[in-house]
Image 1: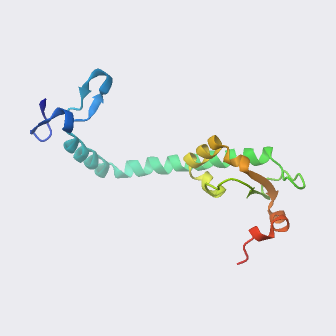
Image 2: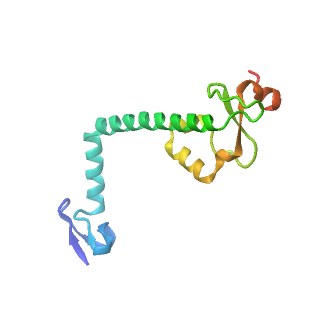
Image 3: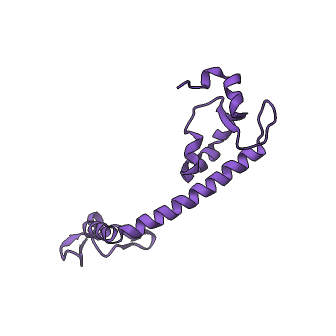
Length: 144
């Protein structure tokens, strides 16, 4: 079946060159995928600052939310050795399984934080007071 694209005016194969708009209803996009790609690129180029502003706003919000989640997690899990609850001195110590990411990445990446919680990876970490990690695990402290 052929269809004429109003963007380029060419007659194209509907199955091959037009993406689905509503697949369940059998309705395809008006423009061919080549014209649509060009239009999308032009739109982004003309509105790039809007996209960047939205991303900056969202990233700041995600960072704040993740820091709050991390603070809540540390508030509920004191040091395994001494029971210290001051979150300013607590750190994570990886004890088993495969490490997927550094905890510091979670404050800027919501996806990493959510996927880690879904997989239960924070369960593979125990909480220590920062100064005690060197005492309990001297091999984990880097000397610069």
